[in-house]
Amino acid sequence: MESLLPGFNARLKAAVAGSERVPFVFLGNFEVEEQWAVGEPGLPRMGFTGGGAVVNSMDEFAMLLAGEGDHVVLKARPDAGYLAYLRGLGLALPTVHVVAESDPARTVSQDALADPALQSALAAAGADLMLYAHGVSTVEEELAGRTGLPLAHPTAAVCKAVNSKIYSRRVADELGIPQARGWACDTVVELTRAVEEARGLLAEGRKLVLKDAYGVSGKGIMVIESERRLDRVHRMVLARAEAAGSDRAGLVLEEWVTKQTDLNYQVTVGRDGAVRFDFVKEAITENGTHKGHRMPARLTPDQLDAVTDAGLRLGARLAADGYFGVAGMDALLLPDGTVFPVIEINARNNMSTYQVRLQEAFVGEGRIALARHYPLKLSAPLPFEELRRTLDGLLLEHPDGAGLLVNNYATVNAAVSTLAEPGATADGRLYGLVVGDTAEQVTAIDTEITARLAAVTEGAVHVG
Amino acid sequence: MPQTAESTAQDQTITAVREALGDVLQRELPDLGPDAKLFDDYGLDSTGVLDLLMRLEEVFDVEFDTEELEMSHFATVRTLADYVAAAR
Image (cartoon, rainbow over all chains, first blue to last red; front, side, top):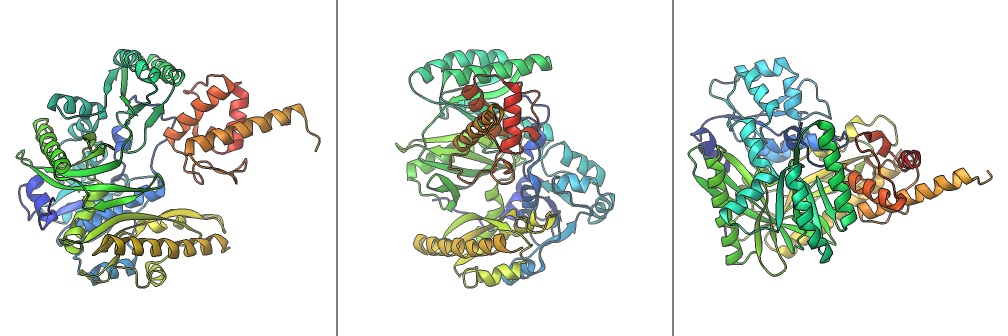
C-alpha cells in the first residue's frame, strides 16, 4: 500500500522550487489542454472551445492545495460560509486575490492577464513568490512575464510536448511498458499506414479508438466499430490536412481494450530529476457511469508494483526530457488482472492533486475516502449555509469524523449566478471527499447525500 | 395543420437525429423536443458531435463538409435537422 508522506505542499515546493519555504501563488487553470490544443490538428473540434462556467470555476480547488503563507488567485470570492467551514476544520488558508472581471468563458489565468491591478498586487506581494499553475501554457508564461514572478514549472513548450498522447505511446514502447496495440500518428502518412494495419482488427470483430493527441482528458476520443467509419474519419483527416497545407495528423489509433477499472496515479518529478510516486486511486463506476475515485485503490501487490515501477520510470523519462513537477498518469486494470500502466500522461496537476492535503489531514491510516462530485440543477444560487442545513449531519465536521468534506464550492453556483431568465435552471457540481472508517459507512453517507441533494434539485426545478 | 410531404420529411429527419443522439449519449431520450438545447441540457460535447455527424452520414448516406460546420448547427434537434436536410 502506498503511503502519503506528510506535507505535500512542502514536499511539492522542495521538488519544484528547491525549498519548502518558497511561497507560491496558486492558479487553478483547469483544462489547460484547450490552450495546448491551439493550432494542433487532431480530431475536428468544429469551433468548440472553452469549458464553460463550471469548469473554469474549478479554479477554487487551488485554495486547498495552498497552505499558510501562500497566495491563490480566484475568479470569484469564495462563499463566506464555506471559508468558515474550512477554518472550522482547522485548515490554514492562503491569501485570496480575486480578479476584477471574471468572464465565465475564461480560465483564471486569462482573467488575471486582463487585470493589471491584480498583476501589480502580485508583483508587490513578496520578493520570493513563485507562480504555481494547474498546468503551464503560453497564457501562464505571459502572466509570469507581466507580474515578474517566476514559474515553478518548466516552459509551456516542454509541458505541452510531454502531455501529447503521441509522446506517451512512444515513451511506453521505448520503456517496454505494456499497452494496447496501437499506432502513434504524427503525420497523415503514419495515419494512412495505421489505418491499413488496423483494418484487420475490425475484420476480426475488434473495436478501435482514435484519440486526439491533445484532447482534454476523457474527451477527443472516437470509438470505431466499422471499416466504413474508419475510412470516413481517415478521409476527413486527410481533407483537413490538405486544406491546411500540412502533413500533420496529431492522432493515436489503438485497439479498444475492455477494462475492469480505470486507475489514476501521480508522480512528482523534482528539478533535480528525483521522482516520487505519490498515490494511486481507483475509479468507481456504477451502471457504467463514473461516480468518483476510491482511495486507497484495491490492488494486489503485483498490480501495485507494476503501477509504481511504471510511474517511476515514466517520471525519470519526463525528467530527461526537461519536465519537472506533478504528472498524473491514467492507467487501466484489465479483467484478467493485467495492468496497462499508461493510457496517457497528464503533464499538469490532476483532480487528485488537490485532494492530497485533505487526505493527509482527514484520511488517516485505515480510513477510506471516495472523491465525488454531485450534479445539481439550480434556479437560484445556493449559499453554503443553506447546503449545510440540507446536509445536516452528513458533512465532515472534525478530523476524525465521517462525512462529506467539501473541497470546491465555486462550482455549485458558477453557472446559476449568470442565469438571465427567471425560472431557468443551470447545472452546478458539488465536489468533495466522502470520508469514513469503512467502505459501508462511506457508501451509506454517499447515498444519503445523493438523496437529500435530489430533493434540493427537485425544489429548484419547481421554483419559479 | 394538414400534413405535407415537406413536413413529413422534416419529421423523419428529426426522428433520425433524435435516435442518433440517443445512441451517442447512450441513453433513452423520451422528452427530447425539437428545441431542446443539446449542449446545455444534454451534455453534448465536441467528441459527441463528431460521433453524431458520422452516424447521420451513415443513416442518410451523405458526407458533410466538416470544415463548414458551426456550433450553431448543433444547438437543437431542429437546427441540426435543418442542416442535415440542406446537405442532403
